[in-house]
Length: 342
Image (tube, rainbow, N blue to C red; front, top):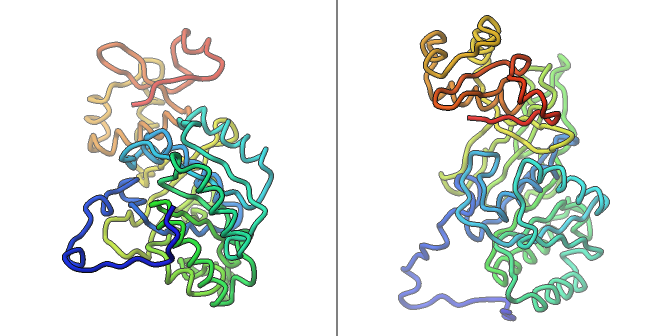
């Protein structure tokens, strides 16, 4: 373990870039040695998406089904709030849809604060006892219980940031920190103001220290879609992070987020076509011809509808898409509603 609190870069190393440190852990989301902040409104699924991030990283499967993971890696998950059994229960339900390699995950509930002498000593002990199992990613969920002192005080946040940077150096890892937003405010007409990462609670030295900030907030364009969320990244130090994507929380079992297309009009066209054809179904060629929707968008819509158990895919050589109520008898016997997505 590296005991020094500093490093010296000199000579030719000053003009050399490490290619490995620019490599993605998750394409478009997380890179080597990143320090990133996930900020979420209350009851939006902050912990769920953090757990899904851990699942994708340990198993090497695409995050949210879309963002490629370079390779499976070790993850240390520090839950600082809630009950451990509840956290484990969410992992169990999530694992039914999102693969998790339990041999690469360490859940480390804490009773210490990261910006204290006791906290540093505890972290040193954890690292010292597991030199062959150091993490490539550390997730701290959530900030307000991980820190001693007021989150609004600059000196407190600076001390916490020092601890995080110490972890990044000693473990050669990235750190993901989850945090809360301030309460949403309304304008004089009663409408909520547009949210941004500047609405994260506490000292500005937190947002100033991280490499990029993700916000997770409720989808407001369609009030009926109460489980939809908007994941966006307005602040980033590079141009290789996704800007925004729409997600939907599927619950209770399995429990996980999926990407949702923003093509509401095209989605309704596909559903109407399948309603009219009913039990016969339609193949992709017919859907493309009659809907006049590009095949790329069609695949997104079909995948979304299948994940929501609204349609299924049948057939051997030619695949036909049907509404779930018109699925074949052998699929109906499966009480869990198992189906194949495109």
